[in-house]
Image (cartoon, one colour):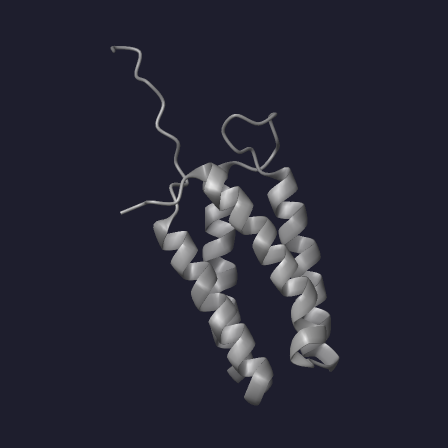
Length: 119
């Protein structure tokens, strides 16, 4: 069941940007783990600003593509700590971030229903 509307999803995207931006400082991440947090904040901000959300000005990224990208990022973040050998805080942060992104993905309505011409 898709209970997160596009408007709420947009707000959650900005919360995600803030989370990635502050996590390195708050959690004491260093090196690649910290750099990745800052990069993900910037990339997620760009994706959100380039996505066409209903009721907003036209943008080049469709909401469906936005969802596909978030799904891929969620899966990648869960796998990443084992691929690069992280443990402790870095592993926990990125696994939880990936799981949250996948949870929001599963609950978000990425396809906006439009009235049919026959109605």
